[in-house]
Length: 181
Ligand code: ZN
Image 1: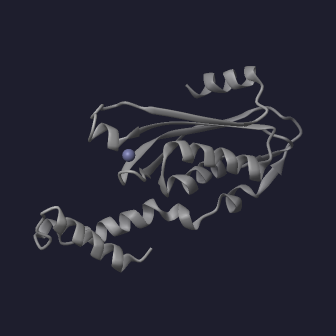
Image 2: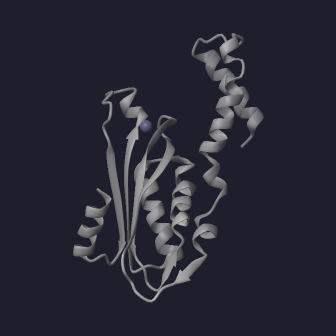
C-alpha cells in the first residue's frame, strides 16, 4: 500500500464531505484510516499455500469440523466492515492440517476487500487445493455494517453463505451443519 498517497486521499475525502480537516479530532484521522486499511488488506500479501502446505498424515478419514472461527473483513461495495464466524468441515484423504492453520487461512481471505460469497468460496477452494480432502464445506455467518448501519438498517440481520466442494455425503453434511449451529 502507498501509505502517503492513501493518507492524502483520506484527507481529500474528509474535505470533500465538508469536514474541516484541520480540526483537532481529525488531525490524525488520515493516518489512522490508512493504517487500519493496511491491516484490512494485509491478506493480499499472504497466500493460503504457505499456511496449508504443512500437513500431517492420518489413517482414518473422519470428518474434521473447525467452527466459530471469528473473522472481520471489509465489504468491497461500501468499504464498511462485515464480521462474524466461519466454520470449515472437511473429510480428509490421509492429510490434515493443524487447526490454527484453518483459522489463519480464513484471515488470508478475510483481510482483503471482500464479498462474503467470494470469501466463502475462496476458503473452500484453498482447502480443496492444498489439503486435497475428499470433500470440504465452508459455512459463514456475518453481519454487514453496510446493511445494519445504512440503507435498510436492519440491526442484527445476518447473512449466511456456504460452499461445498468435492463429494460430501448428504448425511455427513447434515452432521456438519448440526455441529456448526
Ligand atoms: Zn456492503
